Length: 482
Image: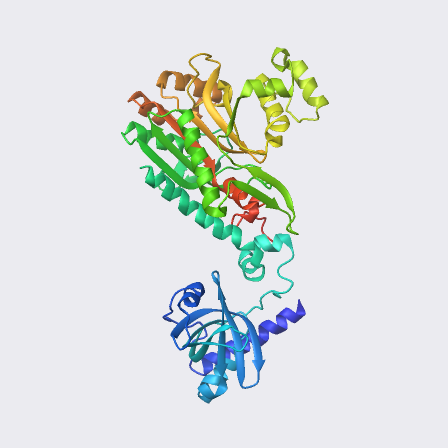
């Protein structure tokens, strides 16, 4: 720690000296030929080039210096010779450190070792660092520090970058995929008077001017359905949800969700849409429908086969396979079986909730390749349409891949009378939690429709092989230090 304080003091002195010499240590506008990768693409011997980035390496050879300038797209070597600069300029250069931001203008040449290099004719200081960066050879080793100071993780640990670039590519491709199928991207409120669309604990806030309690949304569903009422036939939203619940390798309180609704479609068509989308993403990202998840040493720990068509199975049939005779058991017998299987449950859980505990532990967590689980009990999905042949079931799917739910999809319930009954049953004594405005909208008429949700963070984990949700979120929630 003392060494860091000393280095900070030295850099503060350099910052002051740069300013004393009439140069802004934090620079101003500097015209470049684009990102480092774009500059490399333009490279040619004798071609004028302008690049800017962070100094990530410096090799001092006396009158000649070689630097690496880097950004998120890569690095390029810079050559500076003392003879090419006025003494005042060279004095400024001598005050630079690893980590500083620099702009250079010059022309391309190839070194004896074949390295594409810019021979600098001029440079501009664009940002002086005060704190030293982590040693690039050892990186930022502490896991909590990597998440808390992601900016340092991305500088020092090159292996942490690809999942984020892939995430950006995935989100861009999702938008393109849906746009080609004429879905309209919309935005709905993230602060809501009633937290609806899912069963989850909301974050509570307050609007001073209206003296109104509000909730950060747990799902956009009820507002997107209002747009179906309004006559839009294909809509989607790709944005944040907030749930005031636990943190784990698969859960972050703030997460990204895709929800899409398609008028006159059903859950079966939505399943086809999701299957096409995820396969398209895998082929775009990897050129293959085989996903190989590797450990830190590069050994394959799991292979996931996305080859189509994906398997489908009814919820009740899967439960029967996992625990023959389960549906004939009374409440106490189900509890006994769960205890014997060491599956946790709460004493107040009802029969369908106990069944769901069995499903999650005995079926979901063991399913690696894609599986559409269909026709769930209506108590589990209060916003889905009842099955015509069996009113105790709803026409839904849950897509399971790699031991976790990736996407639910429904034939949406559009009967306002049935919807009120379901929401009242779910709310129990807390009827104030029912979104009356949504029910009023349904009473004005909503078409039959299919809907889907996809957790983007989990989807990125699946497609990149990340083991923790914190490895695919730039800035996951952390407890404050101190």
